[in-house]
Image 1 (cartoon, rainbow, N blue to C red):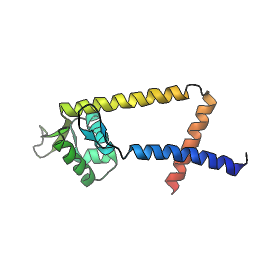
Image 2: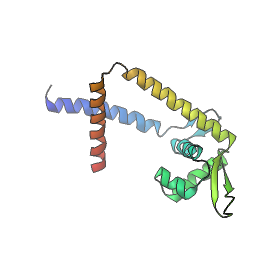
Image 3: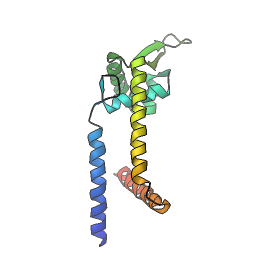
Image 4: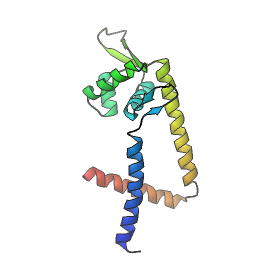
Length: 150
């Protein structure tokens, strides 16, 4: 197989993976609460669950989005009963975030989903040798760097 054909095969495989990931980022999911959540919402729940007491500014920095964007997600999550706000004990003007019981259920469900994904991928890749894994990591790194250059 010539270089051009190899590149086209690799690109086709990558685009298939990219399309699957892109489609999954547009779907809503129920993580055990009966409430459908967008990926941005569950990832916000994940960040708050891992950083109880975080404020909006810190959360925006952590998630690499604007304060305005994270504020919109927070409003939606509050309306869905997933998170609550409270005032800091040492500063009555500092608003902090925490998960509600329903938010904790979603957080736990999301963690279970990631564990299932990890287990499935591990099973898919267990036949690969160390050199093949290193090669795949190198290829993925090359693809990532090419996207960064765009």
